[in-house]
Image: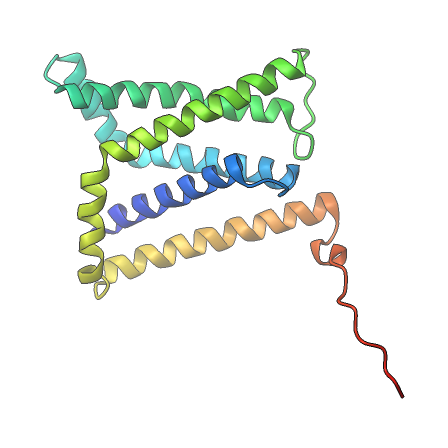
Length: 196
């Protein structure tokens, strides 16, 4: 199994899991939401760059009228995602309160509603996108056990792990700079009083 295929799959899994966390995990705080939102934006850009040749091929086949119905639907989903995701990220930056403080002059409620509505649109498109690629993803997953012995998979996992560690370190550094040490806010456990 090629290293790039593994990296693409790991990035897609990471992006999907993080996106679901942003949509459905409550109480994580605004800093977490904003930082992870920016992280998803970075992963989205990397996803586009890694799949650029595939996307060009899809656009070319649709433009020449040689695409099947399923490919045309995939093309439409890609266009919707490429339009909506940047708007979600930009609107998120405009309503941010922790990492960015931007006064755009636009009504905050309007930007907030655009951000929320398009976030759900992107979630639906991502779900449909995964369904379209389900056969491919299942095929890749079946190859993973046999590829575990190869250097390519280990190399991809090391690179992904290093990237995840770097992202976590950056997150902790920015959080500490803005909010103080995260561990200083953890309350100590109460211990039983000594009877001596």
